[in-house]
Image 1 (tube, each protein chain N blue to C red):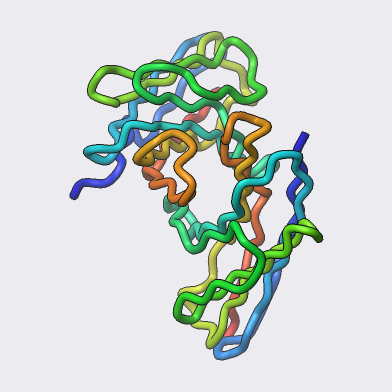
Image 2: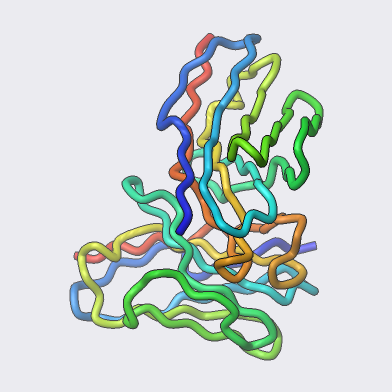
Length: 115
Length: 111
């Protein structure tokens, strides 16, 4: 069974640009969560999608947005990039929203560098 | 709000036992989780506690005390491959059930 797939794995952008990251969850998983990971802040929750609906949102500015498609694939977008957006963006899938087992399956991440 | 605290770094010797502590404050606790993350890799699920007590899984055990807002991850018979970051995470229903992570504990296992 294929794991969580994130694309692209690495990308470099300049300030002011926008970026779109993609995540394909494990087959059958309907919940997708996004996290930003930086050395100073650790894993910070961005948002969670379930059945094409945003179920939860973290404390990030409106420049960060996302969506989920009917096949459960998800994308997140960051507009007007800032230097501080440089981070590893991790996507995680689970069977259902708020799945009590807590077993999130993470992708390898998309490492964004903003110059 | 929610606050999760764990030590930033720990060092231990191969073959030894190490305990990584995690304290948390939450208003809608619904489970505590431990994840392991090797450098450059995705976090992987280790354990889940929702009731008080010890959960054992091979060389790894996790303990929870809900009244104290406290958990620990116990690693026995340490191996070099256990060098990784260990992330404590709490699910809080007062925040929509999202999983909130601590900063992680970087464990270095020395020969």
